[in-house]
Amino acid sequence: MKSLFETDAHQEILNRINNLTDKTEPQWGIMNVGQMLKHCQGPLEVSMGKKELHANLGFMKKMIFKLFKSSLYNDRLYKPGIPTAPEYVVRTEHDFNTEKTNLKTVIDEFNSLKNKTDWTEHPLFGNFTPEQWGKAQYKHLDHHLRQFGV
Image 1 (cartoon, rainbow, N blue to C red):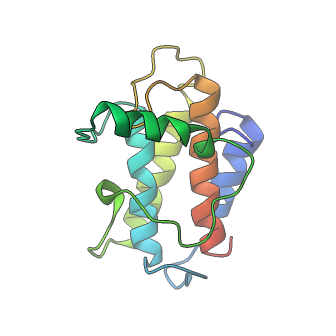
Image 2: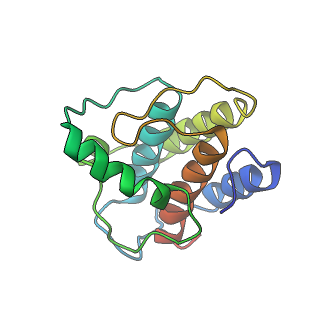
C-alpha cells in the first residue's frame, strides 16, 4: 500500500481531490461529495491527536479490534459500502469548496509529520508505527476517491 508520507502518493491524492467538483456523484454509498470530504478529515485528525474518539471497549473487544488492525493498512482495497464507525458518519450538509480546502490542509499537515515518532494511540486499534499511519491514511482516502470516480 502506498503511504501518504510518500511525496508521489501525497501529490496523487491532492490531484485526485482537485479533480472533484461539487457535482461529482458517488458510485456507491449515501454521502454526497461535500460530506465525503468532511468525513475524510476525521481519521487524519484522530491520527494527529486533534480529534478524540471516545471508545469504551472492554478487553475482549479491544483484542478483536486488534485482529483487524492490519486491514487498515494492508494492500487489500476496502470493499464498496463497508460500514463506517459512528464517530465518522456525516449526515449534515457541508460546503464543497470549504471542505475541499479543509481536507487538503489536513492532508498537508499530516504529510508534514512524516518524521514524527510519538504518535497518538488509536482508541480502538492501539499503537501504529509511522509507516502504518501513512498507509492507513492513504488507503482510506483512496477508498473514498474511488467511491467518487477520481
